[in-house]
Amino acid sequence: MNPDKLVSVIVSTYRRDHTLICALNSIARQTYVNLEIIVVDDNADYSWNQRVKEIISEVKQNNIINIKHQINVKNLGSSKSRNVGIGYANGVFITFLDDDDIYMKKKVEKQVLFMMENKLDFCITDLKLYNESNDLVDYRKRLDLKTDIITNKTKLLKYHLLNHLTGTDTLMFKKEYIKLIGCFPEIDIGDEFYLMLNAINGDGKFGYLPECDVKAFEHTKTFGLSSGDGKIAGEIQLFNKKKQFFHMLNSKEKKIIKMRHFAVLAYAELRRKNYLEFIKNSTLSFIHSPSGLLKIYKIRKNR
Image 1 (tube, one colour):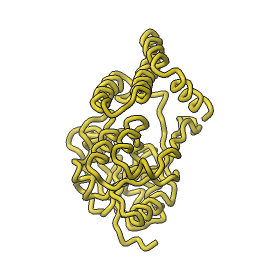
Image 2 (cartoon, rainbow, N blue to C red):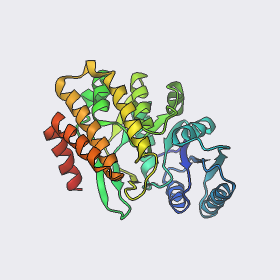
Image 3 (cartoon, one colour):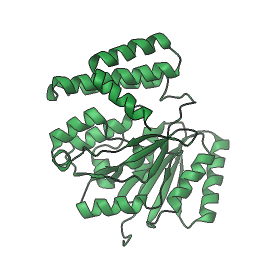
Image 4 (tube, rainbow, N blue to C red):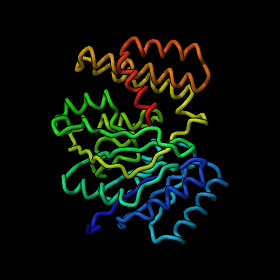
């Protein structure tokens, strides 16, 4: 395709070096060449800032690519850092890559072509999720995301509440549209859910590309904001947000949301070895939707 539209790829990074090299190289090797990479350095530490600078220089030496290095004076977190990147972006389209994930070679090309052919404001693709041992643990396909849902705002909103149209690496936006809806909400748990909620409510034209050119990693052996107290607080806040839309949902749909909420809490408690809370939340999850919980378990088990 004719790469006449500049694409900005925003990479927020914090305390990673080897995976950052892999992430940047995967962008530099894209078949779509009219790219700029905006690395938002959220380390707030001189030695780490220098390490990121070295990595960028190394990637530039091995590839012909435009990379901008934006350093945050203080640590802002991933969502605010992505918004910093959006502020510096010159692209017609904006997409994102976490600093421990990678793109397949045709990711940007396929998604830009899809956006242009369908005159979209935002879109998602499928997502493959791997663990530290490089084993596939989840393959997020949206085979039930049919045209009648995609083109109907109410149906699409309900689908998002139930299924989460997320995966930061899979998102692509027109720059003018993501800025119109206010960019990422400046929180670090569930920010991509709220972003997509705002995008749907903003009446932008949405599309789903049923292909996967992203390899993302789930860190099951390390703890952080997404696995401890921060995860639990964020999940509770997210659940309260969803309850504002319960008037749109039937009894079964409400039960599914409650089941998934308590399942998330149970998993978070299991990771921090709080077994009583794990049992309590697992029980609540099962009570709300036994078949739904078993379905999730079977899907995870078969990965």
